[in-house]
Image (cartoon, rainbow, N blue to C red; front, top):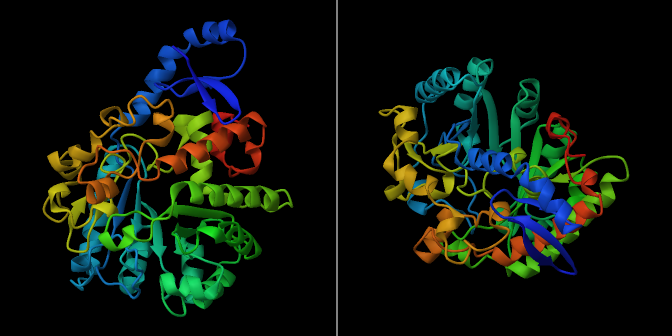
Length: 422
């Protein structure tokens, strides 16, 4: 039932089916776990295979004002120059509201990219008109933000992600575009500690040694949530930017250590990706980020809509027509989400991957990302390029839990109270 696993210089016992784990006396653990195993396995399966949509990622434009060399979108998409009209955006919002209300939830729309603020007037009007009925978010490179935009965002409690890859101006501007660093510094001053802001850092070979410095930099600008994502090799050009998995694991752990050090000074900064791994160990069904779950959230908990309406399991699949589930302007959300092309992704599990099916950490990692693996390996059924990264970081997370340090890496929230994990 429980299997032994060595993690560095310590051992634990774990059931990979439920991710229940423990240390200590074998007989007492087995006796305790036998009474709750069925319930925990059911909870894990419900969490993994629940197909309730909660979110749409909507690209209101194909256009972009940056040329990030590792971009996951095909150039053929970005050169279409399509902007959604207000009427098209309103149609999506109204369809989503009706769909979510029938499910008894207030769902979400995140305006994503290319660069959504190239269609700023229309998306701000949509937020203004529909904010009472649906939650909104914006993921932006930040180039077009003005102080008035930030006031609008804060007044309407819009969740916002902005991109910054390095505290060093030259490196950041090489990766994100000339003038980007100074623009984001300006924007961070306007946001002034806004609690619904996160800063996304894409980890590449160019910035991986600066992750701890980035955390210190963001903390000094009152940012409380950082997302640090290894670059996905969805496009051929982006593969050249993927760093060595073990090297970035070490640098990522340094960044976590830095976040703990700074949080202990009295103002919290959390690396969301690591917090999600912690939750995957101590309260698996409490996880929010949907990449390190099998099946991942693509098509199952969210899907992405391109500017001309074609719908894909997630943004990483945009342009791969063999995964398109239909068009949001001609098909219902329900029809798209249950399409055969979406099922290809929703049915992809770690149990179907030769290298992963016997891994005892399989339901903590999930072997992301299926779109990256399909592009780079020709099949979703391969272990993640970043396998060694996840193993090392998960080992570190277990060590932190055993040392009772997780208070410093999670956000204060109702989630913590609900699951009573600290």
